[in-house]
Length: 286
Image (cartoon, rainbow, N blue to C red; front, side, top):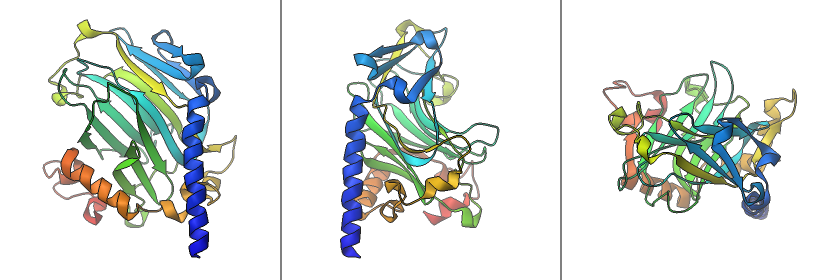
């Protein structure tokens, strides 16, 4: 059993490394397409880097050509520099319809010199309101950083540069919704000044436009839903992210997560008593 676990871990390590390496050589149009703001999108380096821009007329976005039922999804992103208050850069997974599932990484811009907030959220069957926010411990506008989402039927993990920043467990057994619909991988740059910075009090400074966000790494490590194939097939252990190793964090990752929560978390819906006098059931298990 120990030998089997070692081989499984080694295989996962190899695949993770291969995934990161492949992301460098995959062109944007192999897996993605522009979905809106077509004249606000530029491709560089033979399609291996994309720039989304936003001005007062429009932002822009792109999405995956296929839908996925599980996976380890990642994107390298460099955020708009200087005064980006009200500007939202997003990388997320989403299904379609009113009762949609969605996993969000949203970067909430700020005035120059102030920290940018990373907000995560989880929607299941159209129900969200599970926001957590952290202040990033580096300048995300200076260089590319890697943002990742692990999604299997045991847990969802959000990462920054391989460091876990949030875990959302599958607690359907106690009535907590859990994403299970086929999703597309999407990214966008848009105006959120009604709420993004200081609760909407700090507005977008349009004199700084156009705002520009850059994206790299267009390989997709997910289980594709082909035509009418069953989402259940994406729960198979043949996909490395579904193996038992990824059902929970290991001890090192747990320490990293607690460090992020203790040092950088600025908001957690589980701790918002005015909003939730009775905490949501998943919060009682933390």
